[in-house]
Length: 345
Ligand SMILES: Cc1ncc(COP(=O)(O)O)c(C=O)c1O
Image 1 (cartoon, rainbow, N blue to C red):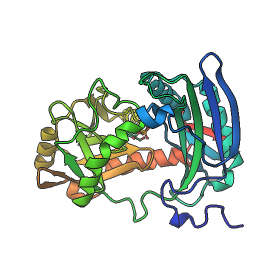
Image 2: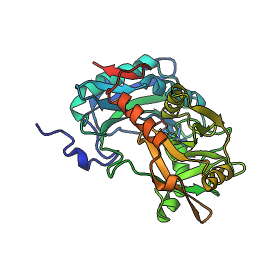
Image 3: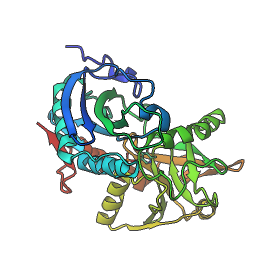
């Protein structure tokens, strides 16, 4: 039988959605109510709806994977439920009980399970979203909300093989500042990153590496990935200062690294230290971590008109080990010793 998403090779990220969606409403005084699964389709909204004006919105991103034996697996979804609630709290939005989040994922994905591609590297992207729905124009927290989940089949991230990317280091525009909302998953952070992304793309780079807002000196993160630097047997990643997203893949890499008895440092790391490490050869590998790519090797940094090549623009051993270990767990190819797999049945 032909898959509902057509040819998995031709899937473009975030353009196609499955047949159903989940939604549940929140009203002050009443709490969460009217949870339901319905056919995927547009919402009717008053033009004054709060989210459209002051961006009271938070979201999540995770994936469902089809194991070779047919099991449907999520990767640490309770972490997404928790991060959604941390994001919500920071924007004065109500918290969603974790069991509503997990049960909704379970029911919706099982219902639309034919939409989960099963060829190598493919998955079903899951987008839980919480928006303010009260219709009014005051800068005030909404009294009504809608939480919904939509699903989108996605093709393999590394279509042309597990190859390093080249990254533009942005030293003027900033994504987020300490004290702001950079550490939560809210749409405004991504809107603020568009111009930098557009300019980098014009120069031929697919990604931007953001530096801190105050001094333009310390490395923060890439558009939708946290970053890691490998110095021989030691890995260094920017500490969670409040302006970068605490990635679930980041946390998983740190935990795997400790298991592998690699030294791990979560600290501030300046772009000068990175470039010096590249020049002296002490910095042996760099990679990004995030739900979309899982692990993305970085082969070159472009900073102030100069290209800096890392590991001769080749994929490093440690980078590859983390990638393999994570995808093996995500696709259920190895025993899940860390309890990270969440089977839907
Ligand atoms: C800004 C940003 N940083 C980091 C990440 C990586 O987070 P995770 O590993 O939870 O996908 C993402 C993607 O979700 C992101 O949007």
